[in-house]
Image (cartoon, rainbow, N blue to C red; front, side, top):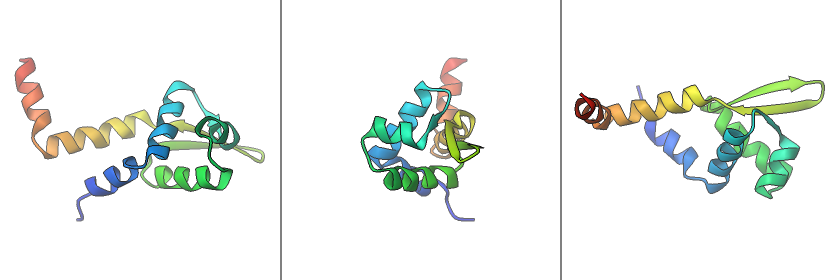
Length: 99
């Protein structure tokens, strides 16, 4: 099975995608139009970034009529980051230090 960590960090290496995640963390959910205004990018560009984040399950989408509303999948983001920390041995050290 391929190492999933490079895919995650490649997605997170985009300043636009990290800004999208940041704004989603500050709001319960946002539409593409709202995200477009916040990150100051064109709608199709925001949609492409959201597609990458959706493929990694880092954002959730709710469809309401013709609108799509996005929210941060915080559990998945924390799980993936935690898996990376465990992979490199940091999580084990943190746990040991807390005891």
